[in-house]
Image (cartoon, rainbow, N blue to C red; front, side, top):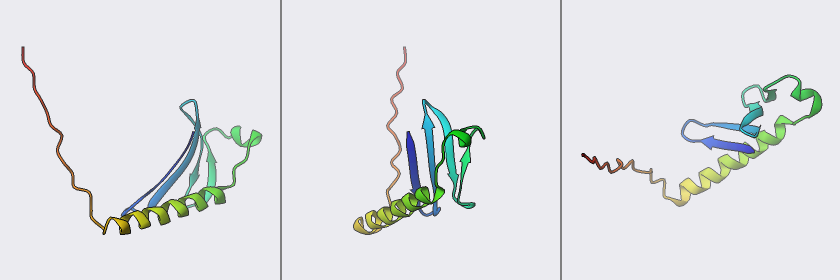
Length: 87
């Protein structure tokens, strides 16, 4: 599974790849490099971190478009409804 996201206003993102629930690698956004969970994985496969950085840039641009289309209206937190049942 490939997972990627970009957060605002934190201005940070993450790109990772996992198989069967275990992380294979992630991309360190600051160092701009692929970080393999186990060093041996890097001997059998490769991944260019630039591809992930490009995806995160697209995520950021898409998020900015969606924020503009919503007139910069922040989402309001609504407390959940709670029902307590007694015996």
